Image (cartoon, rainbow, N blue to C red; front, side):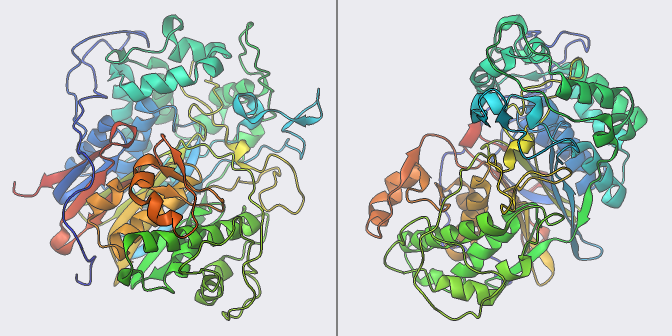
Length: 612
């Protein structure tokens, strides 16, 4: 291995699907958003695995990966490609991410050997209070879905445009305007609607119909765009041109900022909707005062690798780290797969208990990051893992501020807080010819965000404030406060060996992001799967629940064996996560992987395929 990664088997798990979808159409740029033009040209394929040299990209969408690949081939670096790809996501996957949302950008600089990050998480407006989620008519919180998420009151101040600007300023070689060019062309020319885009539109139809601007854009003629039709968004193309000309100041100030604040304070509600669509308080001052934060990453070691992730308000870095630190107390390589997965479920429950107890925005609450990632704390928590029997769930949090690494009392019962995070979001991975790496997770939270399209601007606003705890508790680290960033589960991750990157990975999926990233690392490092197998393997989402949710294929394969440990799995027909990853091997060989099947499959591409 170099030491590199040990590969225990070679057969790739899961079907490798090739689907032609999500293309750029060669039709007039001024066509309406609902135009249907058959025979669209230049359809990039969905390629789940590519191996080669000179740079690589991976995303959930073939148009997005094609944009990134072209940037790399034209001499752009990893940051240039990542920003261009993220802008394209706002066109082809607008229900997952866009300029109305936020995210976390993790970067490895090959020249300095440093991992650095940009926190572009949304913030709560200055006007929020502890009762913003309460319906004044009932004195109780609004029903969460669809009432509370479809609301101006759920919208946080977006951070994505500022993230792109800051990333390009720190590490890019191109301007924001140049980075927005490919996505602007896609928005004008259109992309082919696939089954996922159609189905997500249908699933959101009630919410979208509640808002006139959203109906106009995403429900042309009152229906979801048909599979195979070409969807154009000239309003978004015009918005991108505004940002290209005026920079991010054109988003956080001026007419666009007034329109964003107006859409939050007075959502364009349809006359015939029964949804309450409560208004929010965001002002132009909130937008003008938004700032991204350059944060030091969290880091920890695992089986000889150095793993880097996002610091709070992201909980992914610390929770993945704590779970793996607990697992490192056991020789997983000597165990069979069900035993390893039993340990994974148990360690994850302990880490999730600590996440709920401690994680929030470190600018507002004291998050004991050092304690959560301390090996001594992990040893103490690992004492509660019985190799043979599942602990009753939920388990209690540990004391991450006072510990000695010595086994003490048995696991105590705990509580499991309500999980309101959506399973949406998206992720992309880029490596360039110089060895720079970007792992970027971005979101508008719910599939379809708040449902509010800023009229005439072509993009959805987030509902990120619902990632705060809905019921206010002054002792809750994730309680809502003005200016605060809500806790996130996003876990963009870069793995180094001897100071050089060997793997970058991340996933969407709400709180399931943490389990997806953790399980992929276990699959690759402990179980010796190839990275192709690691991403395709069936998943479980162990949090701190008595009945962990698992994909049906996972239940079919491991359910009986895990029942012997006392685990009761809850099968789901939904995908758990939808990861992207790039592995960097000896001699600079890049293995880029995307999902072969989940959400219709992703797209991984390399600049120069091996053998060419």
